[in-house]
Image (cartoon, rainbow, N blue to C red):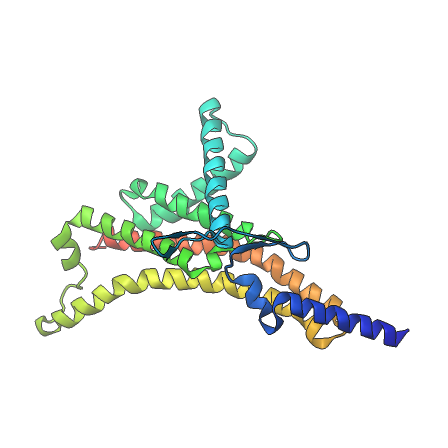
Length: 280
């Protein structure tokens, strides 16, 4: 009986490894692809599209990017409608009001200061989009689009453009770039400091993109790695420990999803405040 169970387990492990792409099954579940993965129920392959030789195919992350955007628009329209119908929102609208007030009063106002109201719409959009995308990625058979470097780069570039536009509008083109150099710097150091500060403008959005991408990717890799211990150890006894640890990390990912949305929004707001009020 033990021999039969051992052979059955071995066959199951072999089929799982073969189905998941061998040793690369962890990256297989994390990286983008031209299909929606509903393993073990099957896959739905997405259409391949080209325009003038340029591949613009719809991928798994693109699909969930659209879902996140559509869900954000739907929820915000519902919240907006609730405010029009009643001065006292209820239910979902009341929950979103708490988050909106938090972003406005605890993030935008302290870090930007005077004139923060102009940047609140962007900060709210970034916060809720990242939050919804992170939570959507925790649902089985879905994909975390914030673990795609292309998505996080676009978000970081958006923050970069808003930051530069705000700084230039407030201080003027010459005044803004002049303000990058700290006061009291010796004349012979001005060329070096200007280059250093100019590079600093681009390292800030780079840090935003890498931080969000790395944190969201790492959590999923840890979860899949813990589950893979069952197949690596080839033992039923490791399953409860492996699944228990994976469940703990999964619950921790809920906190990470909230934390990363907050950090991205906070740093974006801080960079905007530094660009707008250079004298402070």
